[in-house]
Image (cartoon, rainbow, N blue to C red):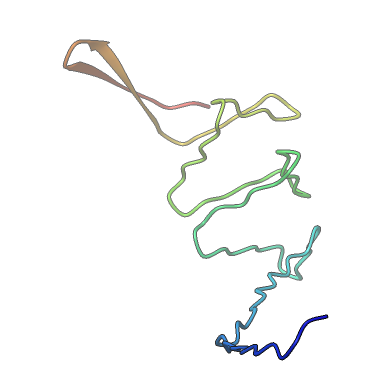
Length: 103
């Protein structure tokens, strides 16, 4: 049998932790009346790497389209530009420029 046991309990109250949840809603497929999509960073990213338009036209402000693998593929196999500039490194610090018009 245990006689008179003195116990002291201390309780420490911690500051409350509040959870915050940031929800970003994005449509998987979206359509606009005027067929224009504008993004903050100018980037459109898709899971299947396909962007399809009704008239087959993709237009950019700076006329540059960049792809990861350097491939642009079209249904009719035609890519037309008014004026194109090709820059390639020949050797060392020498750079060759070639300007051409594709019809």
